[in-house]
Amino acid sequence: MTEDISHVPVLLDEVLNYTKHLKDGVLVDATFGLGGYSKAFLENTNCNVFAIDRDPDVRVYANKLIKKYKGRFSFYNGKFSELITIQNNLKLKNVIGITFDLGVSNLQINKAERGFSFKNDGPLDMRMSKTGLTAEEFINYVDEKTLANILFEFGDEIYSRRIAKAILLEREKEKISSTKRLANIIRGAIPGKNFKIDKATKSFQAIRIHINRELEELKLGLIAAENILQPNGLIAVISFHSIEDRLVKKFLSKCAGRKLNHISKFLPEEQINKKSFDIITKKPISSSNETIKINPKSRSAKLRVAKRTNSKPLHEIAA
Image (cartoon, rainbow, N blue to C red; front, side, top):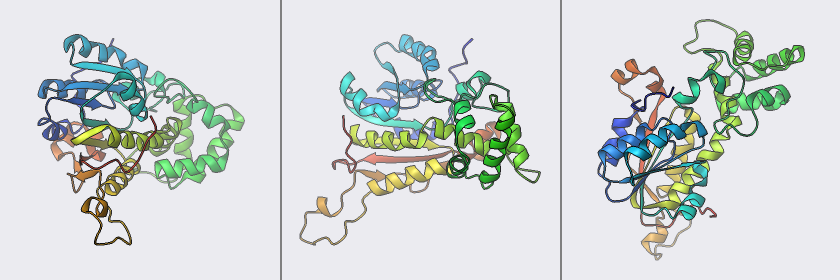
């Protein structure tokens, strides 16, 4: 049984406020998931939609849109970091908008067998593409220092060293192979009560980000978007935690025209102020209080939007 494709993504209306004016081009949904953004783009614009997702399980939802919107929707099972190669291979032209809805999808987190959530016990997997190193393999063989660094860097977990030590002690007794056992080990390593979120949340996030190389993927995806977007094309990025948002903010700020040092006043204007994007959202857009009441997950969501200029990309990427 498949989930309802009518699922409404976080900040959808806010994204549509920017994209609904785009015409006669291709909108790229770089994180297809259950297809909420793709469906909305098809219903609210006259653009064709090209969707990408590394999770093979989403194909069933993509097929529904392919059938319903014949000739206007296409799907590719792969990583958005591969956008340049995909564009070249598929002859994808006139890209006027790209949307990234980052993090884990409802499809992934609601299936215990995928190992992303500790709400229901399941195997320690966490692989978005179902290939490569599993969370179980990582947790049972990583050294203590590396694990602590990952938990701190990718999860902002202040108890990272205590958690890493507890994990190594417990795996000596028995291999850690389930989400429930890992979550309980993490909870036991963190002192105190009355936390706003489950004690295991940050560590699970950090492990997931590491397993899927999410930050590396995001960096490459942003660079790819800069390279394939047409002038005046839009990039919209929805992030759910500060690590992602900082990366997006830094990237767009750099692209938005940092002045060159030691410049001559006699240089042409385009050489004095090189910028590949104009930032539209000076501050990130967050969910309304009403939306948060309906969907608590939206509390941490932040949307940043920028428009592509006529300048060459500041970041080159090989095809």
